[in-house]
Length: 493
Image (cartoon, rainbow, N blue to C red):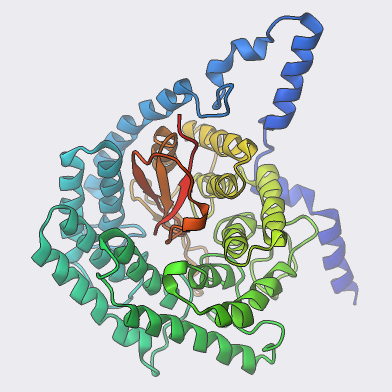
């Protein structure tokens, strides 16, 4: 009784000292506060405020678009970071083929640089790296981020861009052969995003989006979706939660909530239009399951790492509000219920207050991943406050290495694996350089931006923006998630 009371008291008090240990105090004024101050200063003096004269330091111009000065600041970092990365890769593990920490992640980076800059050399670099990956496949996992599915999917797309149709089809054929283990009734494969069926589903949706709908037949996608649904229904019945949460999932005997290993990541994938889940299934299984997660929210607006965890600690993409937010926004788009958007906005407030993480700059459990939450909110609401906040988090990442954050084990891999508990294999993705954020913001105005964690463009959310580039940002993440192609749109110039 006393222990339970102590736990609840800890939640009520917010455990402020622990929160401070996990994140930095946000030094940035919010957009609304900054604008109010500028108007007050101008009203008192009758002249433009000093803040307006220093507009070159602000990420948004007077019209609410990303300023030219801020874009140039971001772009100036990209070349240096690429050079540092290439130098560091000389000592990388030659056998690591994964998108997570290996050659496929680097190939994916260069593929997106090619899309943004249209430089043939970047596409060639992508080919060089994906070839290294394809030589080292081991058949142990099937997912996009951590298994053979990633190299095969990226290889198919790179060869497709190079018009090497034979090689592209060979990669696709091998990717589709992986479904045997995904669909086998004897398989012990989980359902989550990093290592499970949802991660394989992502690989299928990724190539469908990048190459075309004929790349993967709808029957294959339907079988994988059905396997995920049946698994969730079975566990829900076993746990006697069928009425409250019709789709329940676990990883290593724990029912996680977040995007990497938990319910939010799996529900997010099933909510994708390209997954073609029936409307009845969406209404009868997914909607009540999403609502079940909503009701686990802490008073702060954050979410637990697992259903059994009562401690409000983690504000990461992998565990906490930053990952759940993407599920909520997708639920809002699918069900058109404002409550999901309100909850997502509440997640945004948590992230703004507690999202500059001491753990690092990565996407899974770092500041860059938290910044993407603001881009999703901006896309859903068109509220410039969220674009401003995303820029401020990216600005923090521009000062990489100056905040005393944790140093990753392999600082030149695209994704960093940090195993805190080897016996549980609880691995999350961490991009060691904030390069993805830099590329995103360097190309944001007039661009179509896609995230690995957001696999499908929702046509109901498109606008009249002219798309001059397309960038895939890795989530774990996603890995991420953190992490295929749901588009975020900026206003056109």
